[in-house]
Image (tube, rainbow, N blue to C red; front, side, top):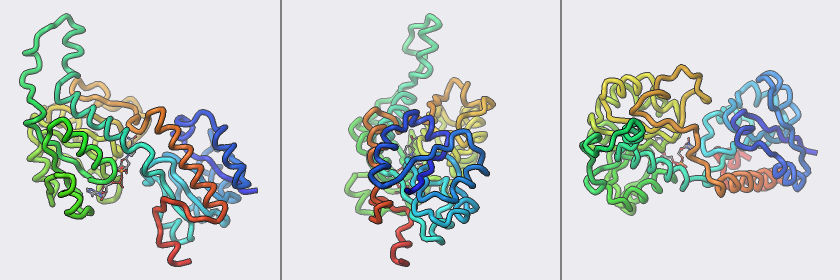
Length: 328
Ligand code: NAD
């Protein structure tokens, strides 16, 4: 019987009930082993006998991978797979698979909700009314969406849905994505920027939808924030480490930008030390952009479909390192 290791505090928070996973594992003659409460060293020992790892948020490191001779699959039940040492897995012919489609619409909705909320300055109006105020001038100026430009960093699945939703509100849309062909920009009616800084300078709102990579780590730093207009808002629903948090806190404190909407932090859950959590011009949500009742269900169904496929010797639909098949 195959052993399938379930790893990561975020996964245990996301799926408090594993009955569906356990039921589906039987189809592949597999049993689910939960690693809740285990140390990295204990998990590394458990991996030795495993055929598959299902993970969210916990690093799957080279030492773990090299300690697992029977490992066939590392599957993230998330879109991002930055926690997995993909190079180490690829060297050993282990499939790395992610869940790229289950929540694209939800994340775009959450990002746009933050852009619209911050642009209408709702975060300032809530305390104003609670304190007895009733004056529209409190948040002057607010501009019509039809006069505003949204800049998208990363025009992939979520970026494209965000572009369409923003266009439905009458916003002009621009994007920076060095890896997407011109025809995608043309088809979506999105203005293309080949460099990031000019787009930051030209937009009233920026939303990030790129993966966390060596190239995007702290992409939004002091210099990037200084390029944005003072009235601009920044939204990050991608990965926390794409934004240098202390830089963002400085920019918000000095009003170098107007406001930020943040769903992801470099360290999650937050330590409590983050100034951002208490700033009046920031909205922070608890890594929830992926969530709806529908996407939650899709996440486990699509994930277990993939697991069953691989353990039965078939190829999964979503492979991060397809080069391992050509080598085989
Ligand atoms: P995707 O792979 O479809 O699109 C990512 C896009 O980013 C691609 O078009 C790629 O070319 C582009 N990109 C890569 N490097 C770039 C760079 N240096 N500069 C600009 N663009 C770059 O992924 P997606 O489904 O759109 O998801 C995007 C990210 O959103 C994921 O990697 C994940 O980290 C994050 N996410 C967060 C949540 C949440 O709940 N907050 C949920 C799902 C996904």
